[in-house]
Amino acid sequence: MAKVKQQNLQSLKSKKQRKEQSHLHFAMTSKNYLIIGIGIALIILGYFFMSENSVSGFLPTTLAPVLLITGYCIVVPIGILYNDKGESAVTTEEVKSEVKPNVSSKTSSNVQSV
Image (tube, rainbow, N blue to C red; front, side, top):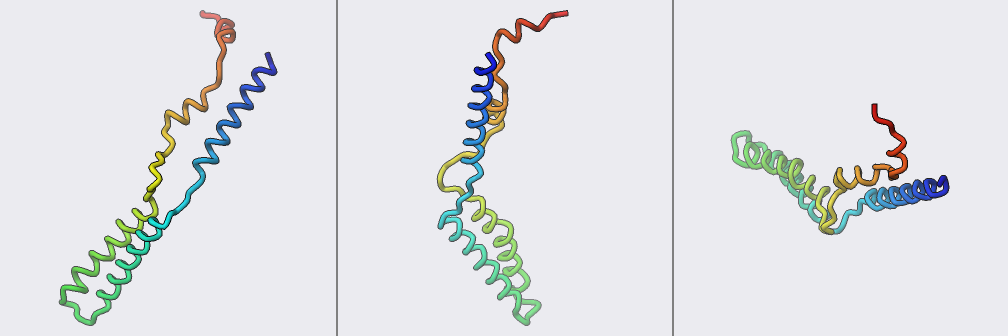
């Protein structure tokens, strides 16, 4: 009985370790780097437009801040988070199902109701 429990525990641990190792892997593809590069180009272009000496022009007052916000807040985070492999993240149900211990019917018969 103890050997069976120990084997079940070891199999659960090995499954958990395999699952953790497969989801700890974070690989950025060339598409990620391309999107991040576009974001950096937008940021550089925004700073270039902002460096003009004119204070009342369209480029330094309107277009430059829009390019900077777009580059920093939209394009670069999309480049970091983009996943073209179609893999989904681990859901809480998957984690809960692996954490639940294997309880046999014999242990539940030992519990006395009051």
